[in-house]
Image (cartoon, rainbow, N blue to C red; front, side, top):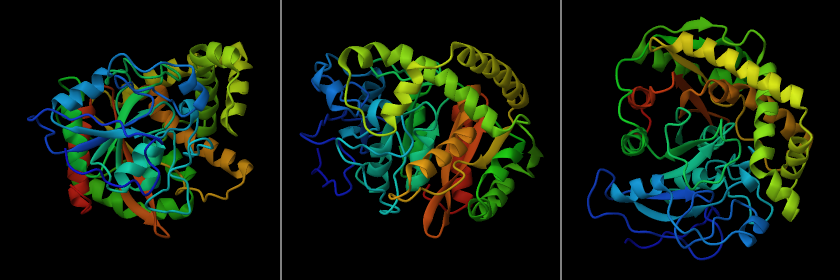
Length: 398
């Protein structure tokens, strides 16, 4: 295995690096990757971003199947990356192990919860990195750090031996340094099928209006590039209820599942949790069952609406995040407002179970902002192919 690269951005979990050599042949031969520390690697403790979780869990007996598939395809595992505690946050902050530096904007958050994976790819430590995405945890750090990322269709990637947050929303995604590597990883771990032509392009008006003017303006050129690849974009209103309504329904449905998944452990261990995470788990415990039920009912309604719209191959296009990465000294109140504004957009794919790719399409004052393409469930491979064509059109790393 090649010499270990020094981690100058704090992407990897502290301590001895978990490394596993890949096969001597395969479609990913020569590529290095990292995995978010919620996937099991045999012989290593999965820390899930929290010292009390690590203390109360034994070393994994087996390696997660998705990691084995990548190793068998020839890729080398270079380590486990930091995550927001229990994957419940979008900033990338971790008070116990240190917040990874955003290589693209060191004075700003890297985004979470797959913060270490994004930082590792952006810093050139690995070619690609596995993360998880429940409410935006691959897409937002990819956008903040200026790399390619995908939230696959719900259920497309095997999450056996991965820690849960909200299982009916959780997806196993990944980030990459180029569009072709993003696609090549998908060819290994995505189900067969889903290729074919996509179109037309649908511009989601609510998401563009939700973005701050600087972000929307910066992405105009990328939108024009997408139109060259896929034809003129049609403007639609996908969420007449408002993105704030999407966020609220998503939040309550997710919180109920988060407490069902992790509440027994939180109640028994009473772990020390960092700011924001502690409050979210307290709110999850206190979730009103009626609001959670309303969230589930709305999800079914929204899912049918979105899937009907996209059934013929149409692709949604919108800013991945309404703002660039927030600065490290942002207030808690401001961060909460950013979280709500952001998750109103990420909830589109989350509620409907769509596949979504984010492309590092532009910069605002030197800070990356991503452009998202989203398609119907099962169209992951076709969407990755379109993203690669768009990257070439925009002269991004292909």
